[in-house]
Length: 113
Figure 1 (cartoon, rainbow, N blue to C red):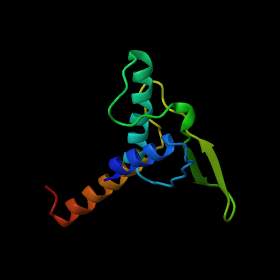
Figure 2: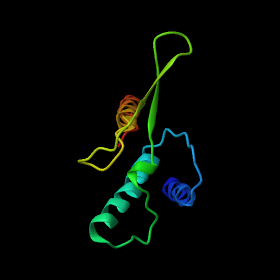
Figure 3: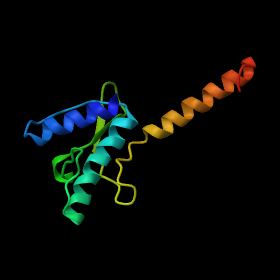
């Protein structure tokens, strides 16, 4: 569902509409990396993908983090990683930590498999 949503947003953006999306979803960011990757592949091969693509210059990803002080935030742009082709947000580390905590709780309850 999130992948399909991201592709539809890319279709809208490719039509020239400025789109702003907020997310905590690693899947949205990974598909956004794929959308950009398909454009880069098309540039190299000369073949267009049947799935939507966007030039990296047309995509921006920013991370908002709580800063010291009440109600303040820092904002930093997340660049596309040239090795992985993904936007490294750090959300995956949060998902791992939550899973590990769930496993500890489930193990303590005796219902982990």
